[in-house]
Length: 333
Ligand code: SAH
Image 1 (cartoon, rainbow, N blue to C red):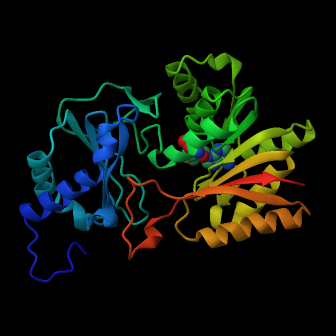
Image 2 (image 1 turned 90 degrees about the horizontal axis):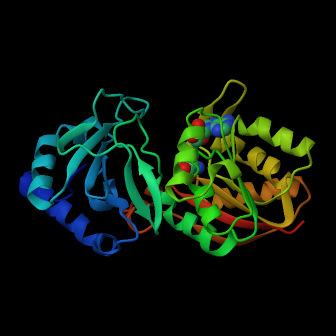
């Protein structure tokens, strides 16, 4: 539903108003030269359910989550062009019945094409972004504060394991924060070149970091057998994933995942447990953590937690929109 006021017309002026107020809300982000990628419009949170717009150093990526909003695309794009100056526009469509990305040959819309990779900065760290390379761009912007916290408060002199590591963004931040060693594990083959690239963007010798292409559940078995222990373990799995051997659903399997991780975390070490599953609350996530430690007769302390950053604006009446849950946990026993 686009409007709750009956008399409000859905015309170009309507969209201009939404876009301008979304941009105004992110003024401080535009002003910060150390971060050049952030969300400028976040669906319901900005009064336009079904559409997100992300900023990547002068380029904008529109993601359409419903046919309903997509049908207004010409008006929305016209409104956008009247409100914002940009280098180029890209789009992704994710509105089939399963919410899956519909692969287009070309995600480029207007303006000039972005270089591939497009280099952006996040709190001074450089990342390669690919605006036209499948469903994902290389960086999940909603974890910005978590990555910064990991670098600034936790990583120094620590051995870090990053599970479900994708392009290794947490590992890069940890290495820059002075981690002794990072290990990134992801089963996608692309994760090896992609992670190497992100390290090299930041002048870190990727050969001195471990990048492992493997199912994390197999890696846990290996680590346990080798009696490996880490100071910090990051777990940011997808809400749902199927590999050859395992189906992982955050809702059903997060406790199991945590139990594996607890066993390879040093006493006194930190687990960064994250989920983007919208199907359960922060309270329930805390229950998962409590259950996992209880079943292993362990003890822990919650150090801090995070949900979506300010640019991922959430509607006050749609708190389900705040799907991100991240908890920093110290293993005490
Ligand atoms: N934590 C990442 C984002 C994770 S995206 C970041 O901060 O950038 C989810 C990733 O999980 C994908 O790269 C996918 O390949 C990987 N994945 C899914 N199931 C997996 C499994 N069983 N073992 C290892 N990686 C898995």
